Image 1 (tube, rainbow, N blue to C red):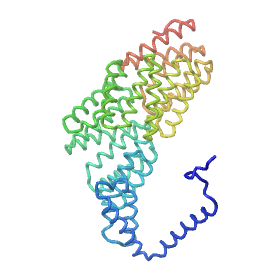
Image 2 (image 1 turned 90 degrees about the vertical axis):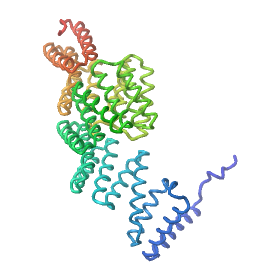
Image 3 (image 1 turned 180 degrees about the horizontal axis):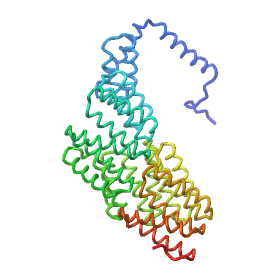
Image 4 (image 1 turned 90 degrees about the horizontal axis):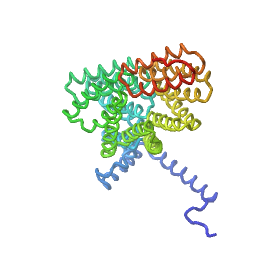
Length: 459
């Protein structure tokens, strides 16, 4: 067999040479006086700029920023502004490529070397990158520091944007009262400043919070108002994300066909503008709809595509949601081991990122599997944990759904009156919030469970 000259093993002599060569390079560099080192770094920057021109420097931005940093620290004049420019450019490129750690590091560096006003924005952007990647523990201190600096600089625009970020973070981590307070303050601030596109952003996020807490009608009103503001004030590119949440509101109030239309619209819009995260979110919701219509092959295809996108874009929160939806497709087909694996992985991710509401949903799904497979006592204990998490997160709709599921578990345990009480509590909330689809499903499930248990239906 002929050896491949391009994949040969490097022998020990060559390894030694390479190692010593690197050492010699480092020694030679360290022997240069600081002023000469700074001049060399400055020379590199100048040569690259001259060779490639401003339009072709994106791929070198991070390296150029580092050369500028070393030159500035060594005392070379006229490099500080270039470092700021290249650091800003490199941070944006890293964020666009979903390189979370690089983007955060670069934005933090920008905050160190720029003016007080821009430092607040740089920290906000670093916090937002963490927030988009569901790194909530890392996002919160960055956003709080950004808020302090924005207020010190009297920068109302950045302050309002940070308040939106903090509101979203608190919503995502189950602190809905504090989240609503941040978002209401953001709405007031942007409205007073006449920044109506940013007011719409805050309004849309408040709508999502209302949706999460089972107030679908209030959510829909806020989302529709946000879309109108964005259309009037030049925020067309942000409308698809708001439409996605409006579709979820339609689904939660029994309008599945309208929801499907809106999900499809958002999918096409996100693909048109190249928003991979938005595309993944739309696919996740379309997959769930397909599963609920017993189109399991289509559901699993859509959800597998969504999972690929969520992992590509470091979107762990959406990854967990898609895993849970995939589990629901397996569950509907009685593939309980596969379903439980998906639910368990989704619950683990939600717990890691601090999404209390999502964790509760997936644990409830696991409890239902355990109930169906004869592990009623285990299921009962898990449901108790689920209700504590729902109450912590203020997830009124999901708690109502799971009260109905818990009633079936209690019937299996022979606790008929406890079952009746839990089912009535759950079904009443579903009727109040207008979720006729789920109310119908839970009623049919209750009737079947009551027949099997030999008791009268709870209606």
